[in-house]
Length: 138
Figure 1 (spheres, rainbow, N blue to C red):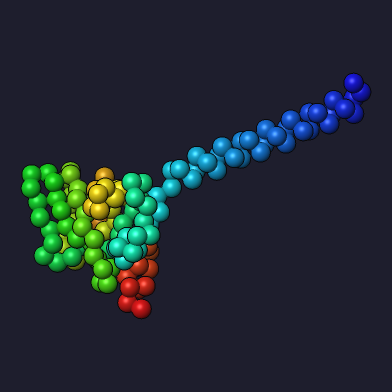
Figure 2: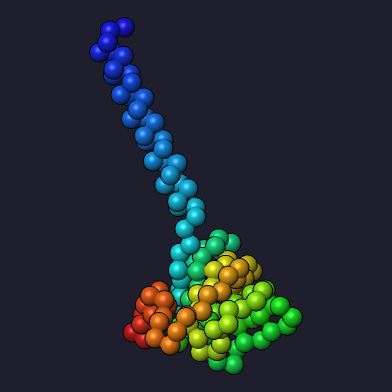
């Protein structure tokens, strides 16, 4: 083999390696993303069943119930509401009428949350929740 052929083989191997690395990176990033859905999108069936995603909106007034460490409540975007079940200690700022984002998955038509986050002051609302509430008004 000549030097030119050796260089061409080396370049081809480098390009193939780069494509493989980029493919593996995109695959890893795609499987770890948690998409945001509003209660309306979940009711419409747009949310994945059995895969983790984020559900956000306001905690519906009068929907909060607690039994030991398991809490159930409805999350609403003022158009539709969806039932959430969470086992664990809720954030201190959690209350009815509060903007929240819950991470979890749909299981048998119910959203089972693994994490619940509440807004941190009177003026802040997560952008995804604000956008979902704005879409629901229209």
